[in-house]
Length: 207
Image (cartoon, rainbow, N blue to C red; front, side, top):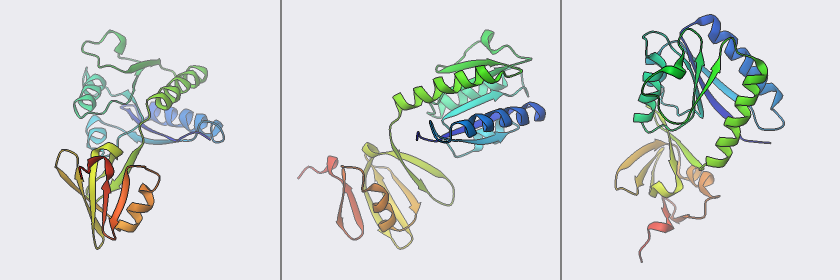
């Protein structure tokens, strides 16, 4: 069974948003035992989407609050360092002719045809499988964040929190017990516990 996919759907039209959510849910149901299910989160405005702390695997956009609404969102995502594919849903606005389109984009025409959506999702799932770099999820009271193995230098546990020092010397804090963090990291070859409260990345040990 494949990996699940997290999808953000931002559409200014409540009717179109509901319809797209239904189509993606049906597509997900068909894939339960093959490529994995879809988790879909919907947004009615650009502000709501851009405030979300989650990085989605794909973004479906047709936000028409302003002329360049969807394109502005896509470029904002790229400026945040989010490289996930963006799918422009073409209706009133023909995004194919818009200026300053970012990289890694697709287009699908409304009304959405089931066979076209199926083909698009196959393409996106294939791309994700090729590009996938495993990340480790951490949470705190403000956000969920995702780090690659190579980004973490060491982690120190404190009661119900952990301090994560990154390879650039910066630090982040996450909630949870160090024992639970170690359970999540056992599958990675780089990490070793050096005592009950400290996990280090061997790649950063000089001597």
